Length: 235
Image (cartoon, rainbow, N blue to C red; front, top):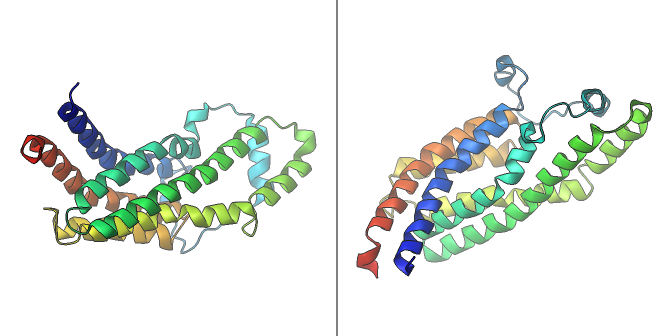
C-alpha cells in the first residue's frame, strides 16, 4: 500500500466511525430498558436503582447472559471508535478553525480515557457481582455503594469523562458554517452533545442525543469521503 492508499483508508475509517459511534450508542442505551414503555418515562435527572435491589438482582442472575450483552461492555469496547471519530471531525474542522478543532480533539481523546475508566468499572463490577455467593449480599451491597459513590474516585472519573462530549461540541463549533457541512448538521450534533452533558446517565434523553449526533455526523462523514476521493489533488 502506498501513502495515498493509506490516507484514503484512514479517511474512510474515520467516516465510518462517525456513523458507527452514535449507532453503537443507540444500541447501548436501548439495552438499558427492560421494556419499550420504560423509554417513555421521562426524568430530568438520573435516578439510580436502589443498590440493594440492583446487587440482589445481579447476584441472583449469576451471569447467565453473555458479557457482550452488558451495555457498558459495548460502550467500553467501542471507545476506539470515539477516538477515530474525533480525528475525523478534526480532519474536517481544521480547514475552517484549526485551533478550535485541535482543542476539541484533545478534549475528546482525554475524555475517552476517563470514559474507559467509568465503563470499565461498571463492566467489572456487574460481572463480579454475578459471581458473588448470595450469603454475602450485605457485604456486596456495601462494596457497590462505596465504589460508585459520587464523591469518590468514581465521581471524579465520571465528571472527567464528560470532557469527551464537551470536546465533540467544541469540534462541532469548529465546523460551524464551513467545511461544506450544512448548518443544520452542526446544530444537530451540538444539540446531541448538550443533551448528553445536561442529562448525563438519563438513558432515554441520551438515546435522543445519540439520534441527534447520528443526524449531524452523517454529512460530516460524507464530506470526509468526498475529500478522500480528491486526495491526489491535495498531494
